[in-house]
Image (cartoon, rainbow, N blue to C red; front, top):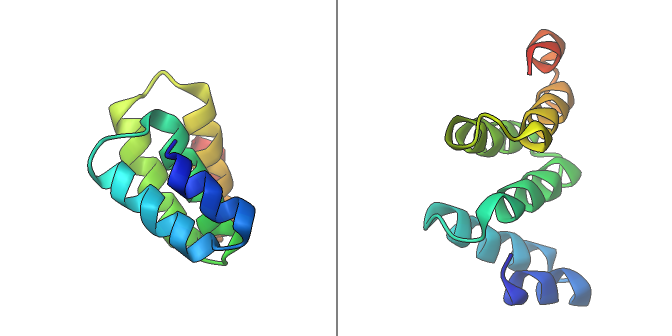
Length: 88
């Protein structure tokens, strides 16, 4: 996870941190940590559908990561898709 993104979170610039994380995820950098942190921040910002999209992409790339599947379920539940949450 990028130091700039973590610094943004620490200083209260959450939107800036999210922008940096999104850039890292789009470039395939930051590993699963960047995608998962971005998804959590999206959920906290009441943008769960974005978190679902992020985690669906991540779990397709890393289908054996149980943390990714778990967070996908959390994101789907936050988006109101309880059946999808159970399936994740």
